[in-house]
Amino acid sequence: MAQRKSKRGGKQQPRQRELFRRGGKRRGAGRKPRGARAGERHQARPDFKSYHALHVVVRVAPAVGSLRCRKLYKAMRDATITAALREWFRIVHISLQRNHVHLLVEAEHKAALSRGMQGFLISAARHINTALGDGARRRRGKVFSDRYHVEVITTPTRARHAISYILSNWRNNGEDRAGLPSTWLVDPFSSAIMFPDWQEREGQPWMWPIREGYDPPMVRRPQTWLLREGWKKSGSISCREVPAAGR
Image 1 (cartoon, helix red, strand yellow):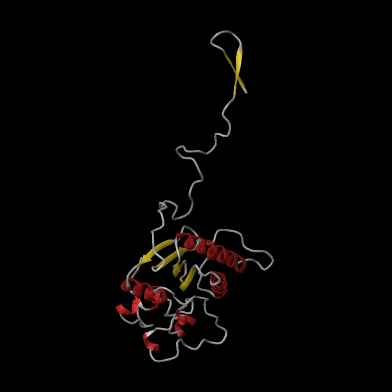
Image 2: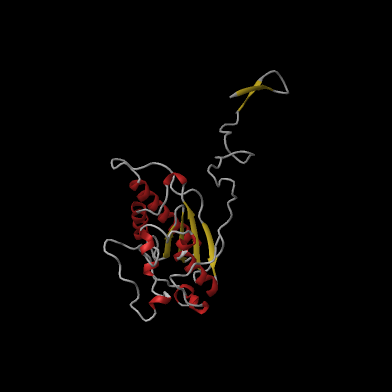
């Protein structure tokens, strides 16, 4: 506590100093962003209705490495099981690429999307860090590098493109040309085998036989008209289709 002289005499009056000046609304305050994409501005999530579909993209921190390997696929699959327990947030399709994840989801409202994605990413990060640990202890460190990006799907044409792009994105990236995935007709690092409406399966049982030892991701049947029937107005989808380049 500091002292100051009174204007009426020499007697000093007490003055309380300001405390806790750190932070606050001032230029340069707060934690500084880090990472390769730290310069990107955070924008408000787009508005949507419960009858819309949502294409979500999540990027993975470089230190994690490629998601397209058996142990990280299993970690992500375990996270889809956790997400499948929720009614207000539904993962309809998922696709793992080397450094990012594509999701096609349905959510009742913005809060449901936020809570659902938060729970899914926390679960995925925990399982991935466990898989990357040394057996005795879990890896520590960031798994997902930045905020997820959301595109609202409002029309049958956009819904068809989103389904095709997410399930066949491996063909865009050349992942279908080498290794074990090249022996598959659909991407094994995605929920493609769970999609019942491939052009090649018309008139056949609702999905391909699942190979021994392979467990597909846990995804939900769509409840929105767009993802259940609406997309078909824009044409069927072939599993050999190479989708047009997306974002």
